[in-house]
Image 1 (cartoon, one colour):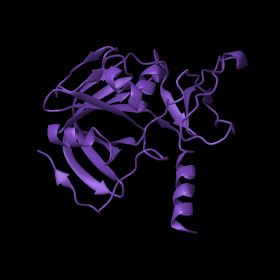
Image 2 (cartoon, helix red, strand yellow):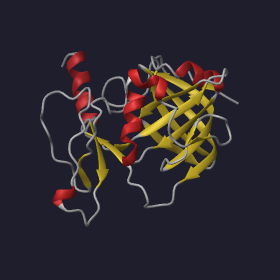
Image 3 (cartoon, one colour):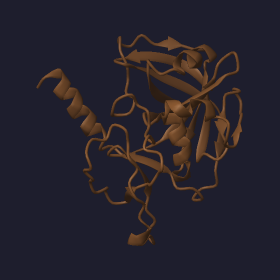
Image 4 (cartoon, rainbow, N blue to C red):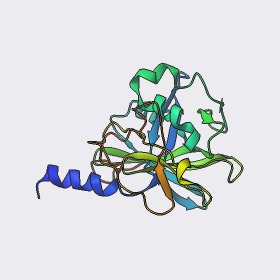
Length: 228
């Protein structure tokens, strides 16, 4: 199998892994806020609390994040599809932080006040792997929404979806969210527990992973830089 074919098959395989959608935010030392969508987010340790997020090294916020040595991971809900569209689209860059309940916790970076949860982190280390940087963050503060009040946003087969309640009727199923990298009108059935894709007026609403799948680790081997 050629390298391009293998890369495409890998993207297709990873698109079948359902994941939550997060908004990673930071602020430059000059005070300018930045944010990007990510699905490659996972916990690392509970003691001490630590997580990791994978970001493409071409992402515009990465240099400011590394300089600030702080970032926040905001877990998005199904009601955030318009917000997600603004952070995906370059045209909406100027409006990204103009609306919404933005606040701060320990590090001074933007925190989305109505996210399912927000984990405010100090950068512990950054490791380059492939096209991405793997950022390890030590959690300094956490903001939680009351459990069960908000449905999470799910990304599966290049579409946004939400968890389906047991009482949901077929007429309540949401319609399609077009995603920029989706090719053709093909639709696939979601696994049990996932509904049909959410509807959106914004055709550009999709995690900006700079190539499916969502950010994975980047290049150059394990040349980690520890932050203290």
